[in-house]
Amino acid sequence: MNRLFGGAGKKKAPPPNLTDCIANVDGRGESVEKKVAKLDLELKKYKDQMSKMRDGPSKNQVKQRALRVLKQKRMYENQLEGLRNQSFNMEQTNYATQQLKDTKTTVDAMKLGVKEMKKEYKKVDIGKIEDLHDDMEDMLELAGEVQETLGRAYGLPDDVDEDDLEAELSALGDDFLADEDTSYLDAVSAPDPPTGVPGGAERKADAGGVQLDEFGLPQLH
Image 1 (cartoon, rainbow, N blue to C red):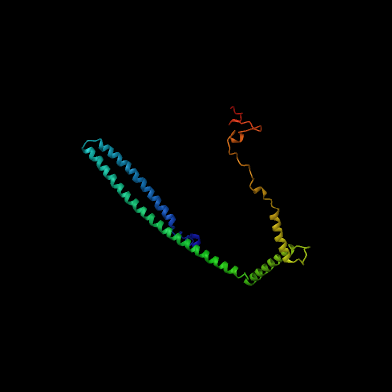
Image 2 (cartoon, rainbow, N blue to C red):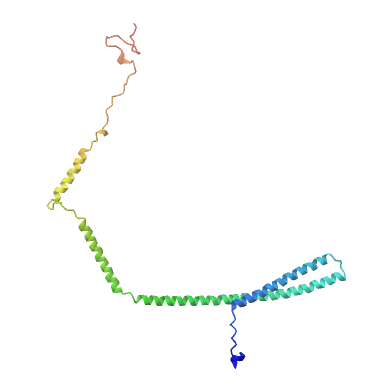
């Protein structure tokens, strides 16, 4: 019977949602703001009329209309202020609620991460890791020995005296010094510059005994 008449089959209304409530209050606030703006225009019209009218019954009638509109404006402004306060409070509550949800999600994710770490850690065998490390050290040491063996020189005499090799090496150093030609560093002996003047004392007489003057010409007596 309940199913036929729909008595017990009626679904429950969904719980209130802060986001929807905030949107609803903001919508009402916007509607009130439009009414306030409309009243402002009406007040401006009455004010302009009063500024062009003389004192008298007509001006007083316009003034009464303006006062009535001003009262309505103040009423709507008070309503708008209340709606804004409601919206702000619900927004703060919604923010705090969402922050708590985010915190719970973070904690749950951390718990799951720790659980997975413990699960994976059980699969790790420390002993096997240490054995693997030892095997790697042995392989690296073996590789070094192989490289040393491959780099070994063949065909060299084993009975060479080390003292003889050192003496030969020292002698080679002396030979290198002896072979170096440093003669180009020696000072080149250049002739001394002349000390006399052209036609000076060294030209007082020629090969025949004729006296010459300072210009190399025979002197006239």
